[in-house]
Length: 232
Ligand SMILES: Nc1ncnc2c1ncn2[C@@H]1O[C@H](COP(=O)(O)OP(=O)(O)OP(=O)(O)O)[C@@H](O)[C@H]1O
Image (cartoon, rainbow, N blue to C red; front, side, top):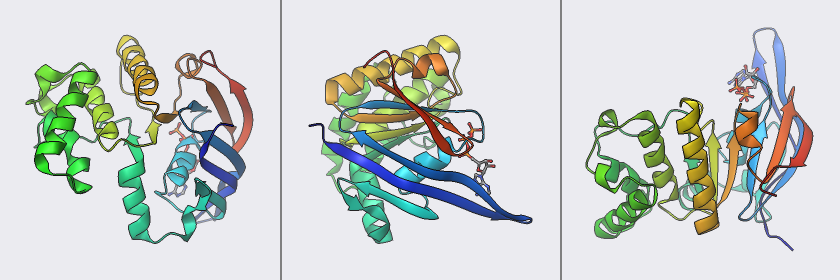
């Protein structure tokens, strides 16, 4: 049986605004298996980013549960959550969020240093990852000296530095042209194959989503479709 890494059960999220409550997610239950690749699609405002944030413990649900290997994360303290996010999860965003004053190498090494790795060890791991994403020659460049696709590849390398079990990616190719987006997608598929890291990828792009193993669709905050993609 496949190991379930991350799961949510009857998840709901409501926001209060001036005129009352807005229900952004309702009754979402799903399981993410180890080493799997899942796309979350749906129109703008359907709740994709909200779901990803709840799965990553970046926000708290209004109702329902998120569990990691069977442990309900809402029971954890903020310190435990932060430690879990640093060591077991990787995050990739639409805008790379690289630190502008640091080199590509330093950006990739940063989460390893935060996790307590020795600087030499963190640097060595960052060099290996920059090689894996095809950018060893850009290690000493700052983000402003890199192309959009290169920055996103550095962000992918950074997401892997602490050997996470799962990477949550929010529109990782949303800011790239079609060809660069396809290359970055292929890189994520290759990294999944090479390291067995699970991915949950929020995307607007149905054709890229279709290249993953599983495609989940949200509509008005509800899970309306859960089907196999091409990779299945
Ligand atoms: N902090 C907040 N307060 C109030 N409403 C919010 C808040 N965050 C998100 N929303 C609302 O929740 C809904 C879902 O937002 P979410 O960002 O999850 O959608 P999405 O599917 O990721 O959209 P997109 O594809 O445009 O990024 C939207 O209607 C949004 O306006």
